[in-house]
Image (cartoon, rainbow, N blue to C red; front, side):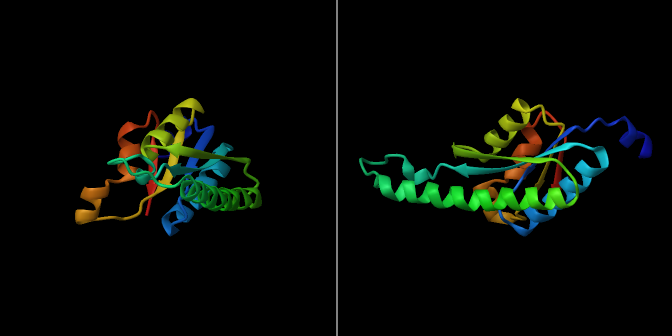
Length: 156
């Protein structure tokens, strides 16, 4: 195992956070790895476009409702990624943030960001959905794992 870690070149780590306890654990792991490999850390949060923002059957959601949702989501996202930066700075790790808005797919947004930024490792938590909820809603961590160009570490 030690030989494998010595061969791995991790210079850029992306940690995706969503406010869950598992995301906080993932952030801690990402910071620890960034410290170990002297890597840069990018903390991101994705604001998904709500499905109801699309016109259906001639009905539309009033613009102010969507604007309020986006504004509140942006504020929450900033708090999440700023907390990761604060944790990283305490460990003397260089960290930046990215908030992706208007994403139709959280998976595509994370995978695209990782590819565009030449990320070497994605770290993220899992919501731990099981059974029908997982079948119905899918799993972001599974989607990222299946589509990312780089390794993905999923933290529970």
